Image 1 (tube, rainbow, N blue to C red):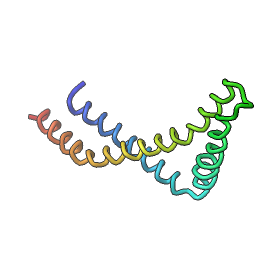
Image 2 (cartoon, rainbow, N blue to C red):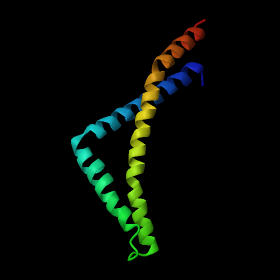
Image 3 (spheres, helix red, strand yellow):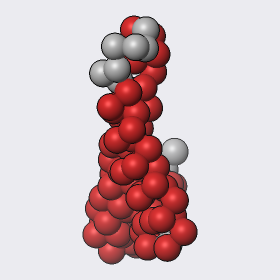
Image 4 (tube, helix red, strand yellow):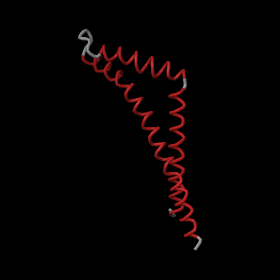
Length: 110
């Protein structure tokens, strides 16, 4: 694959990362998402599951399941945060990628 094509693929990948970051930000700012997912699930439900994970009336497997579900909130928040961070990084690199593509194209035409 030529350098131009490789850089263009890298730019396309960066655009996808930026798009995913924008989606994550929109979701995080959406009132319904905040209410149902971030508040109800990530706070209330996961706290309830965390408490259940220590309930001696449940067997070991049930307690482990409760703990795994309680941890889901952390995984979801981390996933959203990483998507935003990756998109921000890609956005900062976009001008450099565009410049590198122009330079590689000019070298191909010489």
